[in-house]
Length: 427
Ligand code: GDP
Ligand code: IMO
Ligand code: MG
Image (cartoon, rainbow, N blue to C red; front, side):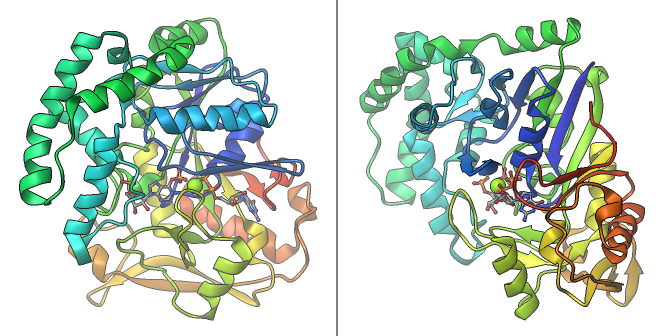
């Protein structure tokens, strides 16, 4: 059985952690392929709730090997504290593998992220302030620090020098901050080397050998399609490729190995940070979605912006990711509305538009065209099969499926592992 990709179909926080954890029992490897600790993936197991930032959600399944791929950016201090937090709760993390080619988020990346946002003022992106953008920028500029550099002090020192040369000029002259000392950074990074050593591996080789042995590999995306640096609402995006192609580059596995691409899709829409969001609600309905859905960021604690389901975005996600399935989450949150608006198209400058416009000016002017679907009031959190759902909830799901362009193969009716209706099996 080849590889599966599981990714966010909207602006992140669709419920990827829960979906990954659910599949964890049937897969051998769970791999993060991009992003870093900007992600916040919530997994609820029984009465235990875990918030994972850098570790793949498969870490909670003992049979599963969690892997941090080369495309991820790793903040070693965050990683070590996440590991020790899980160890204290009795989770065995010894199987973790980290790519030696993954780039390291250093304290200067975090500083640059924060000062850049401050400098942008009203035009800020609303980043998570975790140093993600500056670390990927250094990677592309070829002045990044990789995990393997921790094991050669002389190379590490040269690389930190190269990275700080220009950065210190900018920090002192443009941002009016103090320069960062090379020695201090090198010393801090070397302090992590020994602790990380047992996990560092040639993950590309490990994953490809596993696939050759017919092992099941699940790629767990961070963020979401509309936050993708190439395919999202640029510049209001993250600095990596959460879309399906990112799994290939971010883990070193060829596209021919991937058989399923599962888009995690919330039954309504949320977004954290700045940027366009056509179906955003500023009224009581928006507040109710936030309250009932518990829409508060796992990483930054910011309130999430909330709005109705947007089928134009779902169709776009199907296209750019080649989705084979959707996992629809949080259907239970919509219980209680008499009628539920669903955005089926946009109106842009008086014209109806069915597909996501490539032009940012058009997207910023897009007004949602709504179709009203009848709601339901029955509690659905205990539904185990599609037929357990009230007729109107069934029709809501079917309508979304029709509009979104791929089959809905599972439905979330609550945060717990077993609060899921499985329609088609993924593996
Ligand atoms: P991720 O970043 O995509 O993993 O999503 P987050 O963990 O940031 O946000 C999703 C939130 O919704 C978490 O609090 C989950 O526990 C919760 N959740 C996931 N699926 C469902 C569902 O089907 N119903 C409800 N009510 N909550 C869900
Ligand atoms: P998960 O994996 C939602 C958003 C930030 C900001 C933009 C850029 O939990 O779905 P960054 O720090 O990445 O440079 O910020 O991206 N963002 C997320 N929004 N869920 C996430 O992750 C996010 N990770 C980043 O709010 O708008
Ligand atoms: Mg999240």
